[in-house]
Amino acid sequence: MERSILSTYTAEYEQKLTTPAKAVEVLKSGDTVIPGVACAEPPALLAAIADRARQGDLQNIRVYVLAAQKHAGATILSPDLCDCFQVYTWFVGPADRKLTGVGIDYFIPNYFHELPRIIEDYLKVDLTVSTVSPMDKNGFFSFGLSNDYTSTAARCAKKLVVEVNKNMPRVFGGSLLHISEVDAIVENDAPVIELPMPGPAPEDDAIGNCIAAMVPDGATIQIGAGAVPNMVTRYLSGHKDLGVHSEVLGAGIVDLVKKGVVTGKKKALHPMKHVFTLASGTRDTFDFMDDNPSMESYPVSYVNAPEVIALNDNMISINATLEVDLLGQCNSEFLGGMQFSGTGGQLDFVRGAFD
Image 1: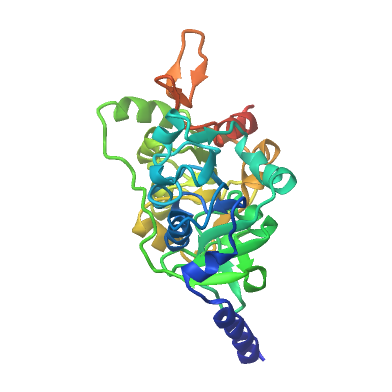
Image 2: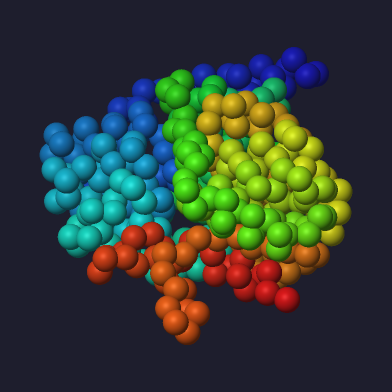
């Protein structure tokens, strides 16, 4: 019986397997596209879409991105294609910061946890493309490093095309996608984008020791995006039984799991599980996450919902900010007269962790 089921899924896989160029033929001018976020950007599919635009086949394509990385930067965000793609960003990343500054890329303020609802209720998504982990014997892929709103966009889109990559880690929780939900498959084993922790800086000791002293043993932590929050993980190595409920799971958190500092034993919600909606890091990070049942990824509508965050006892939210004025007001997303990043999940966790 098991062999028969596997044969059925394998046959369906082979039937849907195609080339990137063929897979994106479903896209037509005026359509809306949502690609996978950050490390889940699908390079082969994005390149195929850009190729069609350069050939004059596509016009007025609306694209929604968040924390865009190099694959998007070289394709749908390439300046020579700005007449073909109308790009909207929910969080300015390294690949579109300059474009946003000159008005080619449009920033949309948002609360991260609300994006799945916005996509579901207000956007008509024609095509979602994302990198996923290889299919298992039961016909399931995993969204891997990018659950966030990608899982919602995948199920709302008229067409879903996945780029299967053996380098994408398979994770658990609410991260599974069945082959029956997929319209087309391409394969590409390019290295997954790596975002390593930054090297040490002179101010690290002052910041790291100060924050570490505020984190009690047994606390559940959230580590935000950016160099400073991830640096703080180096100063938590003497703690015990920390838990993780975090928008982003990065190399620093995984290192704490390896050291036995993060165990999740004291968590009130998802005990013994390390919960996240986005992940980044290095190849070592991804290898540790792969097929590890303690790693649970869920949509951002769940992970970042303030009412869910508040269910964690001793919830500590650690984020970066760019400026603080004399009244204690923080600016975390605007710098030098331009949009630098976005609200992301910072405000979600500030609200959820507030005691």
